[in-house]
Image (tube, rainbow, N blue to C red; front, side):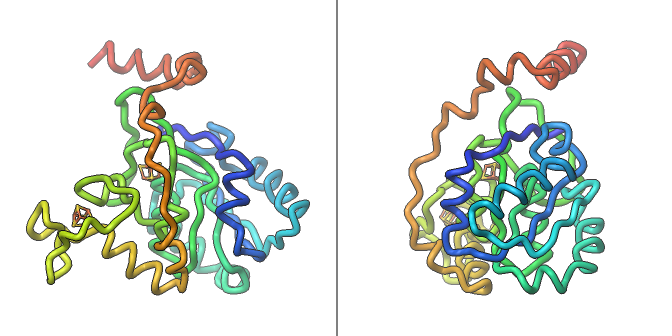
Length: 228
Ligand code: SF4
Ligand code: SF4
């Protein structure tokens, strides 16, 4: 289980500043439980976006967005409305957003932040990784996570040490995540996002807050740890 919470509306609208037509993708797995995904939450957000003069070209809810095969086969049937949109807003954890970014050549934006539950990690079938940083920046990085992908977890890259072959300076054979981010933003024609300087990540969000410690997820997590 990956726990997520909605980003503030202002942050989502700021990410979508240059976007008018949007396609919405929701996850019916963990995100639906957290009320950040699922048909009801996505339909409600559609109404909100329409009050903000945005056009929603379509909606698709996938059972487990973290499953790239399942997500790919569902989204391939939505090519026409996705093609009509300028970007995709994804209602899921960071893994789901990364999967959508990997299967569709469109800018992807996260509607939620994936939050830490004190070290207990969820399970998902793909290679995408999320460190539950609580401040998802995938909307500015073409859906590639710099927190888990970059050896230094830089949210403003590159560091300058990338090798001529495109490897990370920290580890031979490891691709530079920021070079991948640059290439992806170039492909989707959003290099303007690369030039944007992001604020340093608020590391206090890595600690589960009081609100989170009162949830059922926290109680289950603590119970799992006691039994380990
Ligand atoms: S930026 Fe990366 S680590 Fe942070 S929530 Fe998004 S996917 Fe997870
Ligand atoms: S070379 Fe790339 S991946 Fe490695 S630390 Fe620098 S920016 Fe991060």
